Image (tube, rainbow, N blue to C red):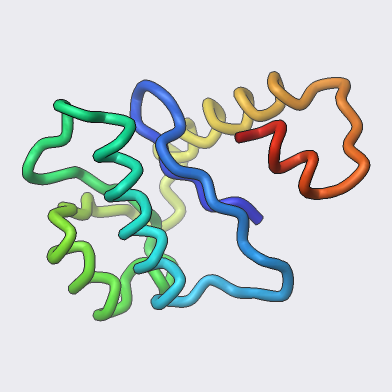
Length: 118
């Protein structure tokens, strides 16, 4: 499984979840810290004091540990309505772009797939 963060321009941070691992608050907070560093690298000069973050309301995203970390990292979380069809359109861009990159290709192993997407 991939965790993907992007803005209106492109993917900023992509992480592959290790096999037999689940996303919990600790893992997600680490991802948010990595996102902050990636944003500084990729968006040099464009990073403002507050970064708007929109994620769904899955437990790791709304835990008290995550909410504290988002505040500490300077993120402002936008509200997310459960099962909102209006928000699904953002997925179409991501999956369409991934399909474009991967169309017609076969991979011998996961590492080669990971390399191709990054």
